[in-house]
Length: 456
Length: 100
Image (cartoon, rainbow over all chains, first blue to last red):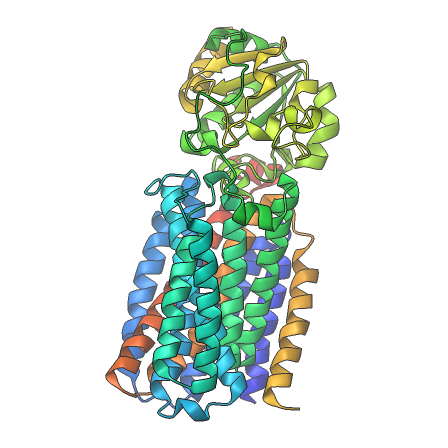
């Protein structure tokens, strides 16, 4: 009977995820999944032979307060950091479940092989997810530099730690020594740090998706440890979801997962030396020029990037769009899959500014429209609109699908300076005849443009 | 069938269900999908509750407490923040309705 009720909770997860797939039903889907979770928790507390209520109540209380506080307080621009932390905590929870199993078992040497292996997987994946997510958080939050961190002997150390964890895992499973399991945990925590440190900020959409998948797999592994189907089902669902997003992101960058994880893509300094184009003339524009160009356009396509999130400019964008629409201009948004720091980051920001989701176009929807668009407004995006990816086989980002903004009548780029994007590659778009460069912080530039538009 | 084989069967089938259900999600919903999925991975809280409720040694209790607390942050925070995000996703018609 209990198993049937747990199955009901799992069905709630599946139906909830399905409803999360469409804007109209997504909110009810999330609530259905939350209901399934609550039911599973109550069921566990009722049916399990709980001796120690104090520990449970304390854990639930502390976790609820912290979780609710974080969820209510977080800014939408900081959503990637928030999801990274939640992933990490989910991962370590699964590792701790397995760790408790080791402490409770007095005779580890008689553990069935499958349990021992499940415990190792839980600890391994959960711990990697934990430290990996916190390093990702630190990079996104600016605590650690966003560029790839490299040091001498990095490869050798990674290989050694990798071999070490496999060897100790085998020892733990065969000998049944508690200390061996702890060493697996320690090495796994180290792997999480070593694994994410050399990955650059702009590759975070891939990293967060992958860690999301890992947090699911860790839960599934914990499910094997305590032989619980809801954990296995829930974990497998999340593992699959994270993996799908991971591959959608790498596809959008035209790179393999291995390339993202191991190549240390991106420049060390993010400035100056790269590219030889910086001496070419650009057309500078003032906010007044931008207002005139936008104000007399019939159609405008806005292309947001990470700079929009950094400048917290989502509300200013919406105000500009409203001003243009009141003049009869058609406004749409083109969103590249890897714009921002996590999948769908830009969409959430624009939703916060109350932009209707019908106006947000993805890569395929936007592509045929550029040729018929009068003005494209690029806000804090760079590599995703770089024509080198299409035209220059020698470019490091050659082959990455881009938004072909240079096919529109005029392009206005709002950017703080001419510095190359994350990939450290100069962007020929900036030097084109049809491109106007408005050097400003995204929010500041937009607000001045809106003011100028009113005087038009 | 041994419990291990049953577990593997469940895992493989659930993975396929996950791939089927999620592969057609539009990019607009990728962030809430991820944070909602993340909250679901907090199902490990069940294991945490069992571990914390055993009433074993002090070390086991500390580990159990930490497991429950971290999993709860994941569950409560994950579902709430997803709800907060989804509340903002509005269509043009929703927006007009609200204005009236």
